[in-house]
Length: 139
Picture: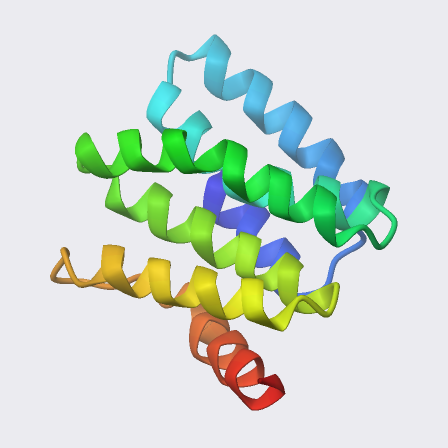
């Protein structure tokens, strides 16, 4: 279910539809006690909410990243590297889309630090390389 949501985002599906799927499938994950999988949809949920409800406000995005740093550090400490990596990735995508290239580059670097700790790095169907390249071209 989490991969379906991520693929929908990557494919450019309507954000309102993705948000509906997040609510429906997220509720089912809780109902079936799939708490780790539910945690895995948080990064995409935050990205969808930022893109669909926020106006251009870089300070809001920076505050959100700052608020998540403790949670991300705890995830890294608990070896939830994929969730941490995807969180940094989606925050980087949102930062890039709002023109905050320095913040996007910071998220890329933090994601790479996390990815260095695992054997298999998440590629998210080519989106990681694509947004990494866009971010550094924009710098």
